[in-house]
Image 1 (cartoon, rainbow, N blue to C red):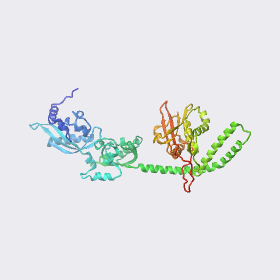
Image 2: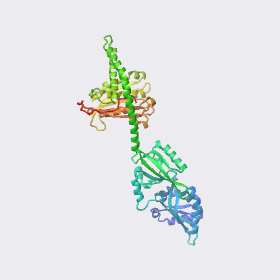
Image 3: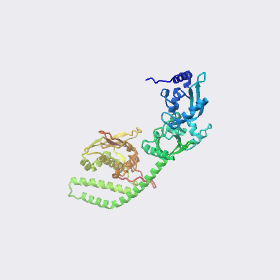
Image 4: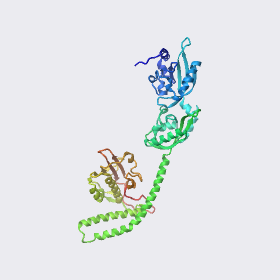
Length: 517
């Protein structure tokens, strides 16, 4: 439907078109040019309005120019600015305007009265220049402010109370990967990690309500997509009339500090765990020795049948492994045993045999896929510890009637495509690991089992595999009908050399082998 225009609007529109010829020249101007009638209704403008205000010329045409002013400033437009133009023929000054997205900008505005040849006024023309960066930052022509901010180890920007950024230092623009001309109107919260936004916005809103300082920690997205921990602070800026106009925001990188603090806390926990493990191992040793001796006596009883003797041999092997673990814990896992050639298939079978009662009671199906692999020179107890932990976790995660698949084959390290070794995978049809937890699954004290887990099993497993020169990784899905987890291990043949004579002072300390995650 056509919008009816007054005769004055029609005359002003005609004059605007005449003054804008050639239009291409007007659009090349750096200034925003807006034509209105005497009531402030926009009758024409150049394309620069899109850059300054975010509107297209078509969106602004026949709108009142008040749309470009914050609600609280529109009275000034009607009561002061337009009357001044009508009385003196012009106006010039700095004003606060509002873009389409709602964020405030500062404009240097020059308005002239348009008149017929007989002196009768019929409209106005305004020339607007965005001076927001200069207004907010106070940058001088010699660039001393920019030099100063570059010397500071922090990101610095300005944001209005709506959270829209309207200025940022070059260091900040480089961090976010956003050019200067695109930063205006971007909300600072969009650069904050999704998990930190709710809290950050709550602190921001409280600072606005209290007209006070904003301070909190959050993760900010860098130009490469990585999130880095920052300490964010904001100082409120007030206009001459006391109204809150903006916040000067700084964000200081505290990522390394947080990692150091986390490592320190983990070290303190590990020290406590080591002390506890040593104490427990000491208490276990005496009854363990007694049980070991009793099993030895039973094995040598000639009245035992072959089946009972095989069970006792298995019990004796596991008691020997317990004795090895307690000895290692007493010495804080000071490595004293030698690497020997081991058939990994035998290790897998021995662990599955130990878990046979749990597998049977859970109605789990076991699929073995062993392809011929040469013996691997390794610390057998440690590899058995890793396999036992992974298979135990898989059984815990798999529901009644689920499946476990254990595969073994010779392989090449996928990273280098050069090292030869063995590839072990243990897959289950359990509930899977949520995406947010996958990157933490090998971290110390991280567990998804609540009070039933220590958060040490997979972390120690990763440490043991890496001590063998290998790698361990996890793939998981939580999708309905396709959930499950696969743990992959690669162990190179050449990582562990045959034992060499121990030289004085060469003994090392590694972490205790503790079962459970």
